Amino acid sequence: METTYLIDTNILVYAYNEDSEFHEKALKILENALNKNINAVIADKSLFEFFAIITDSRRIENPITIDETIEIIDFLVDSNITIIYSSSFGFLKTLELAKKYRIKRQEIFDMNLVALMIHNKIDTIITANDRHFRNIKEIKVRNPFKQQIR
Image 1 (tube, rainbow, N blue to C red):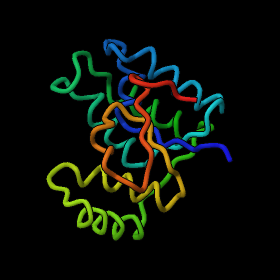
Image 2: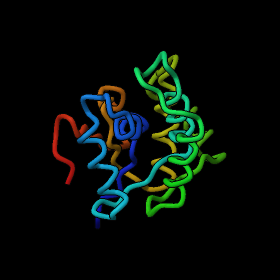
Image 3: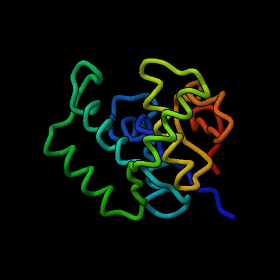
């Protein structure tokens, strides 16, 4: 069975932030997903997070405009990449995982991604933030800046 990957927000940000040292590699991952060379999904919350980061001059050196960002999100939604959406299951599973792993602060958002992955039977996340997920037994983590994807 082919692996399905969840593309984390940071991969999207690096793919569209040409100033990032990870731009080329992240863009290649996104292109592979768009061309169906890898089977990939994106969580709806990652698109909102992408919007918040890529338009914020405090987060990146050269933010892009709101209109450009919305065009990118529309493009991704209409592309070959499946968008997975939050659900009541995800909400409850997030809280269950938070309790199990004793997470705090911003880590709740990563647990929500894990819950979405479990609900959608996705076992592997592609992320630069592999340390955020390394202790989570329910999923596998691939950092494309440290290891080859596929």
